View (cartoon, rainbow, N blue to C red):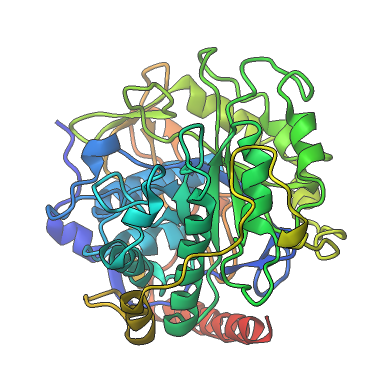
Length: 477
C-alpha cells in the first residue's frame, strides 16, 4: 500500500516565512501580473478532490487541508502547465498555509468560491432575501479572512449559478449586495485589492441579462459591480468547431466587455476520452482577445466522470488519457502571443445600469438591498477567528505517492519546481517525471531548487523587493 507522507514529513514541507508570487490584478478587461503588467490568461482546472465527501466542516477536511495531498496534486498540475485552480467548498476554520504555500511555489493561483452547499452558506435563489443575513455573511467574511493574506489568491466568486431557470426576478439584486459587502470587507481588512466576481450557467436568455445586470455602472455605487465574470460552458463537445460550438456567438456577445471574462468550467465529456480540441481556439485569436482563458472541469475523477486523474484510496494516482490529451493541447499554445498586452482592454467602458433592459424575467430594478447593521459592524470591526498571516517556505519538493500513466507504467522522479519571484506556471516549462520503475535525477529546468542558506536568502530578498513593488502598484490602482 502506498503511504502518503507522515505528519512529521508534512511539517517539514514548510519552514520560515517566505514572500510570494506577484498578485494578479484586473486591468480593464484583462487580468495582469501586478508587477510586470503582462497579460495573465487562466490555464486552469477545477479542484474538488473527493467531491462532496472532500468537504467536511468541523472535521478538519477540505480540498486544501492536507499538505501531502496538495504537494502531490500541485506537482501533477505544474507538470501539465496549469496556472490556476478553482475550489468550490472550503472550511474557513482550517489553516490552509501548507497548501497555499505549495501552490504558490508551483506558480499556481486560486480562485475561490465563498459559498458552500450547506444550509445558509449560499444565497437561496428562490428567496434570496431570507438567506442574505448576518450568519451567512459572517461565514463569507471568514473565507475572505482565511485567504486574503496569500498573494496567489486570485479572486473570490460571490456566487455560482444562482441565476437560472428557477430564479426569481430579484436574485441579481442580492448577488450585487453580496459582491458589495465582500469588496468593502476586502477594502477594510486586506492589504491589497482582491477581485470579486460571479460564475454563471450558460443559460439563454438569462446569460447576457446576468452579465449586463452584474457588470453595469450604478450611480453612487461602484462596489456592487462585479470585477470579473466566469461562464460554466460545455457547448464544445468532441470535434466541434468554432461555429458549431457557438464560440463565435460568445465572442460576439462579450466583445465589448469591460471586465475579464473566462470559462469558470469547460470540458464536455459526451465524447470519451476527451481530446480538448477547444483548447487551441480558447487560447488564440479571436477568442483570446475577448476571453481570459478557462478552467477545465475537473482534476479528480468523481461519479460524473469528468476527471483528469483517478485518486485511489491509498493515495496513489492513475493518470487518465484525458490528462495526457490536455497536456498535448496546452503545448500548442503560443505563449508569447497569449501574454502580450491587449490594446483594447482598457478602452472599454461598462454601460450605465439605467440603459439596461432585461430580455428575461430578471428585474429591471437596480435597488441593491440595504446592508444590515450587523453586516456593517463586521465590515467595520472584522470577524472572529484565527486566520493565517501568509506563506511559509516550501522545502520538500519530492513526491512519494505512486503515479501511473494511462498504459500502467509508473511515472518516477516527480518533483515540484519552486518558481522564483513573480513567475507563474506555464505549459512545457516545469515538467518532471520519467517513465520507468527506478528513480531518475532531474536535470536542467527540472532540477530541484537549492535549499542552502545563501540561496534561501537570495530568493527571499528578491521576492521581498518584488513584493514591495507589487504593493506600490496596488497603491496606484
